[in-house]
Image 1 (cartoon, rainbow over the protein chains, first blue to last red):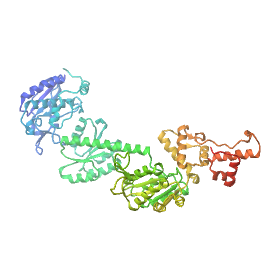
Image 2 (cartoon, each protein chain N blue to C red):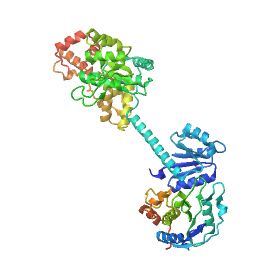
Image 3 (spheres, rainbow over the protein chains, first blue to last red):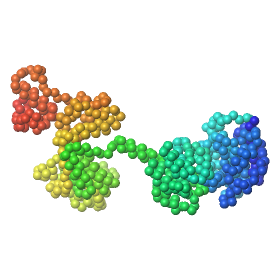
Image 4 (tube, each protein chain N blue to C red):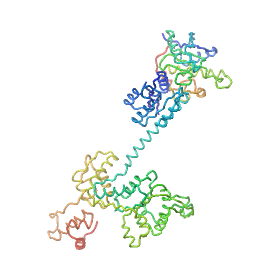
Amino acid sequence: MRNTLYIVPVHHPRLENLELLKQALSEVFSLHVEFLNLELDIEAVFNIRRHQYHSTEILAYLLDRMPDDTERILAVTDLDLYIPILTFVFGEAQLRGRAAVVSCHRLKNEFYGIPADNDILMDRLIKEAVHELGHTYGLIHCTNYACVMHASTYVEEIDIKDYHFCPACQALLAGTEPRQP
Amino acid sequence: MDTSDVNILIVDDEESVRSSLYKWFIEDGYTVDTAADAKEALQKLEKQPWDIILLDIKMPGMNGLELQERIRDIDPTIVIIMITAYASVDTAVQALKAGAFDYVTKPFDPDDLEHLIRNAIEKRKLTRENLQLKQKISQLSPEETIIAESPQMKHVLELVDTVAQTDSTVLIHGESGTGKEVIARTIHNRSRRRLFPMIAVNCGALPESLLESELFGHEKGAFTGAQYRRKGKIELADGGTLFLDEIGDISPKTQLDLLRVLETKQFTRLGGNQIIRSDFRLICATNKNLEEEVRKGNFREDLFYRINVFFILIPPLRERREDIPALAHFFVQKYSRAMNKPIHDISPEAMKRLMEHNWPGNVRELENAIERAMVIGKPPVIQPQDLPFAQVLPFDPATMDSDSLEAIEKAHISAVLARTHWNIKRSAEILDIDRVTLYNKIKKYNLQKP
């Protein structure tokens, strides 16, 4: 039975944050959440010219190796992610699929030359993880600036939005495939 | 605008570019498709309309620049965004010159892409709105059309074409309702001044003081009630055309002021001393015989010669009856569209009535008659009873009180006068008597013009 949301740490140095993430995702999606260690060879997804990691290839890797009871699988990484056409991405997900990936790399204050703040990082990480998982349930970007599905192309936009779905997105989410609690 | 209403086509030979852009736009809710080359793109362009096309410049076969030209031929309103690598920025500039909306350099910053698409949608929306408004305006006020079936009107059009390209002053003479302003506007629209306004002033409709203020403008406090400075029509016509209708009605003082402006192209506003220059082309119109008015001393001779540089005479409608069917049909189509009423023709009987009518109000009267007939008439054709002028039947001797020759003559003359709307010349022609005789008979039988 597919009933577990797996969180896969990939090159993630701060494991304590993942506990908080696990708790938050469990509340938002009412799912059983587990950690899963997969030996992802990050060199295989590294682009030497861009010095970045191809997020789509990470998704393919997850889909290849996910356990049978996987409801959704989410990689959380510290790597700087990209897709070929964009300079970077905060994360990527399969629309109406099962795999997603989020990166902390550009969610950290340090990336922008300001002092580190783990609370802010956690807040952003939860929002982006919920956002990407929302895509896996078929949700597209929402025009409501406070909704977690609102598109964010810079961190300040992530800070503005909530980590909950707006009523319209929540209703769409409720209409998706049945999930086991 | 709902993003799903926006159709985006991505044309790029690189699969990774197509797929990642496709995914990006799908997540934003757009309707998206991709094409790997120009051929596939053209096929997709034939199948459905597109709002925005992201187009890679470097592709095998037909490149992005060539494809851009083809897209422009198919639908010039599509917003094209060129995709380029750093090395081909020059080509992107070339694309912009050829009409592309913008270009993006691979890889894009997500925020830049989002803004670019938002701007492209806004542009597309404005282009569409602009087109819709233009269509609406052209439906509401179709371009002035001059119907010229008669040799007289064909000659008028030749004169219009001849004078339009010059900067000469034009004097248009014609009865009320013959379309003097339409001719003036046609001259303006066909002249090099068409991008500037044509300012029309009806000189006959305003008293002297108001007309002066209207023409020359006034400074604040120039007269009681002049609380603000106001530009005159002459000033507003700078670069364009000044159309003075009913020029024969202006007062001697205004005639003198106007003459000065025409000689120097300079004037001052009422109550002001600042010299204002205005470069305008003058077209005047009148229904009076200005030569006659000059002879009577009502119109300045020097002003007459100044405005009578190129003379156009528009004959009255009754003298060019060949134009009536075409004009009538033109107005039927015009009001059929405006009223959304399926009347598209005129019955032969109604047309006969139109041809017989004397049209003292000329084309304007004809237009009003058709408009009224379109309102009260029933589809699919206009019938005689739909026309506004009363049917004038030949008198019936059986209904007459007396069988005397005089009674019959009186009734017959009355009927003919009614039919011609008391046009003495035409009635005399129909009765085959001279005008003096007709006047005498009107007096004898004590006939009264209604």
